[in-house]
Length: 349
Length: 233
Image (cartoon, rainbow over all chains, first blue to last red; front, side):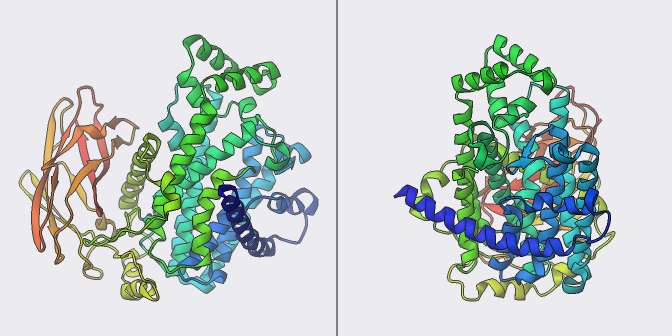
């Protein structure tokens, strides 16, 4: 019965995500220049957005706008900009992490080289600005500016969070706590994955609402639950479904909740060996060492601990859903947003 | 460029409404786990940083007050339409007036009740009031500031207490939240009444000098929040 419910919930969420992704992509692609240099730039800008991402961010943005009584057409440019920023982050993130696969295909830098990939990522960031500028005609100057303010905060938080994580890896910081992980994830993931998409959707629907903080906790808890599930799938998922190399986070030394739990649970000798492993360049890490890290995570139940934390955060997100959306009239969009919380922790891709 | 306004929305008035959570979801929504509490605390710290940055930059580009002042009734009506169970979305309920008298700073905070401050009367940044310790504090010593809380509604508040985030300096040093205490620690404010609360900050020995700030908030009264600022000598 529970499986049946989860399956019907997944179908509903995926149908909505597909629909919103389609309309967002239509808008996004309308903003991509159709001119030279195509081969080394503009043909590649659409590469990541065309791959099978979930479209979570525009989905939340559009659904929130509609749930608050707004017109979907008014928010599409902002949703497209958020999606384009997201894809720019991914291109650069893949370079920074040295990742090999993204959404089931080789990463952009693996296919076209680091220099081309970095420039394509830059172009995606720049191209995101135009749809936000063109909000002016339909939203007016005040609201257009407020959307810019939201987006500026979103991007800045993301790069700060990314810097934290990159710094931990570069300097092989091993003395990290759950708090460090939660703060880094808030900054790197949650503001732009869930908090700001909801804020921008409601802002545009309400024509300038100052009451946007109702989404902060909701988006944060949901965003961390999403990130934890993503990190779990990276370790135990099916590569065909997940689209990235399984165990890639261990190869990269990424400070996930599982790794931090392991670092804080292991014995002195184990921790010392772990830190030595994490201090090596990726190219010098071996299969055998990665398998040892997996075994250690099994020994200390690090994956189960993280899964449980993810579920607790999803539960808290559910509570906050009623704070942020509970008073609105019932609608399919409201139902979609509620379902997406459980969908994200149940998903296998 | 200015930061967004990180004001906590109020989800229910003084006559607080609760929304029923479906029974099927209760198993994962009823736990308040360690990880959730830590996440909540970290979010508040980050929001406090945003508020402080916003207060420094407020008013330079957009007249937020004008935007806020636009048709508040229309916004509220929009959600009341066809809705059987509506969460109040009163906005801008926190107003502040600071007066300086000698070494004592007293700050008045409105606990809410539905009325808005006069349009254009207050700079938008003042919507989240600032409580500033009147004098610099030496490490190892404590200081206090008094605030007055007003309930201008026709209903008594629920009983509420206070909590603070860690106070952070620009250099990244922190004074733990546990060093901020309140007297009384909890209270109820009757309709159209006001109460005084003393906020005490203890700076532990060895606290590096500098300006520290964080958020103080009330439990059960989401719209009540203020930025607490203290200078350590």
